[in-house]
Image (tube, rainbow, N blue to C red):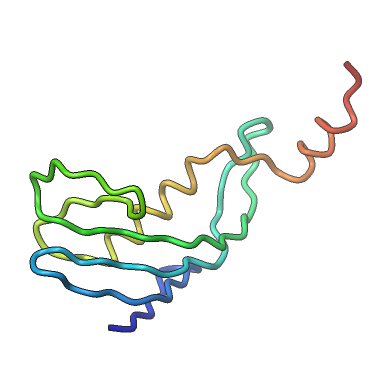
Length: 108
């Protein structure tokens, strides 16, 4: 099934396939998210362009998959998965352009 979802400034485009109780979701998350620079603590917009692959399973799940990120949910909720992915990207190691230039120009 083809899926297109938009949450805030983030777009998910992809497809899902159900295999028994398991949903396989593959797609791309694109857009802009407001993040905080870890050095100067100023906020800036970061472009997101991520390929994602999820295997949505009912808990408890003890398996492992090299190709898919495992997400345990009682009921398949793509909005919740996308929101969680956005929050994860916000917590990444984000450095604004100004701080990147300063770091590059520093003498050691």
